[in-house]
Length: 398
Image 1 (cartoon, one colour):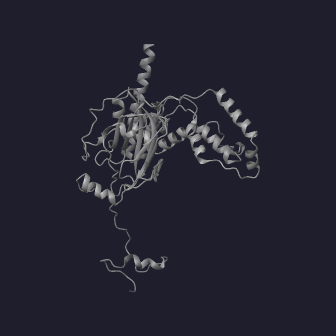
Image 2 (cartoon, rainbow, N blue to C red; image 1 turned 90 degrees about the vertical axis):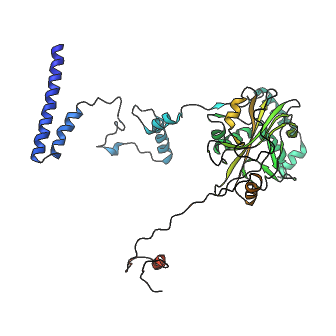
């Protein structure tokens, strides 16, 4: 065995000396590039066999006509998705990205549990409603004459009980609410949150609709269904508004220990301030989150001075606030809107916040034109208009 190992080592060293000698001879003769195949051949013998089948190894490239035709885009798309989702033994870009971002981790549901009624009761109730509808002659006549009308209030109430929470969850996920407020977590808003601005409740907050800072200048009217002795916490925050740290937020309103659905009876931890999206930053999100409390919560360490017009004191992180009181509060409701700059924001910065208004602008570079040609063949008729009014001498009739 020792003799075999010694022989292999000697053979390897001899091969390396031979390759080095050939490289030096080629360099002396001026054929340095021609000596490269010797180096490549010396390195290739060290490569190990592949760990599995290579891609497209089963395809006979010399007889491509024998391959099965897809004959439809649907079949091609199905085969492409199957090949894309198939596990391979080599390293791919998706594996590299998933490893860095931790995409394999599943988000955690931190919301209220879903208490769905039994399937038997649902079927029994549906049969009872269908039986009553068949026995109603007025309903049958209206349906036959196509004059039957369904009240939208009943439709909305049924939607809120069945598919509404899941639709709001998908919208919130689309707008990145969970990603920015509760990283690696989400919740289904089981409690419908109704938020309206104005004395006549003309400006309502839904799921991403647009409201101006003028419309949201005063505290809104908030209502939700709650038991008589239950306790709640209401939060209004903006994940896009912070001027110095993109990971921080500004808390606009925080009321805790709300008894039932009477928001005015709660402890105002931070008083309301209108949205102030900076000029040039586009639309920004403003999120209402309703937490259900298990018991009375002590918010003495979270209280802001009243009035609080210092942005440093209004800096906030929803995930840290939730972790701090995780044992007593559970997110249950969600509503959000978008807002962008208007004239009232300038007054908010100057009057309330007592600071200069930040303005974000984009400095566009001047349009580049190549040097003018004296005889611009094949150019449009307005070719010379690009060079008029400049400092350099141009050609043309003025």
